[in-house]
Length: 170
Image 1 (tube, one colour):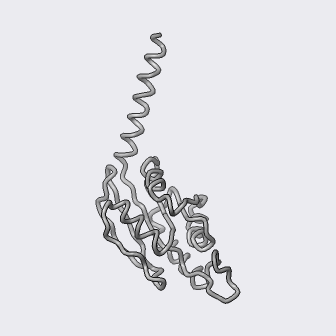
Image 2: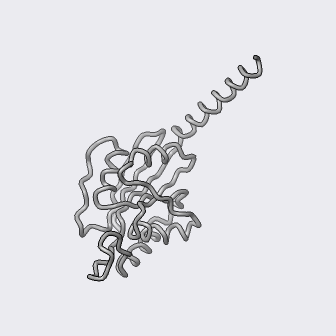
């Protein structure tokens, strides 16, 4: 009987310690829309590749965000979002993890529970601003126009609370 009680105490301490570490951590979350997609008449209408201009912008994203040294990289499961994330993932020797844009709360919970502190998230013109709003816990950001590809949201958190959101261009 005594062994079970000790195990419960130890397990409780471990769970509380993990929860404290996850909340106490500082996190930086970079949110970006995918780069320009191929709009040629022969391109796949549902899931096009990125265009040559998009490839150039994906490498600009890599250069613009290199100081963050991402621990985890997330993308929706589309060629244009994965193509945006892949140069950065290759440079950091990380895999691109896919997420469901319709389940943004799950992604936020995963990021908040992670022991890591630097994240890149690639999504779409409507999902990334909404994700920024979800993280900020207020409606501040509007959906991007179809022609807007250069916006970066830099979300800085401390102890589970947003301290600052910067909007940059690349």
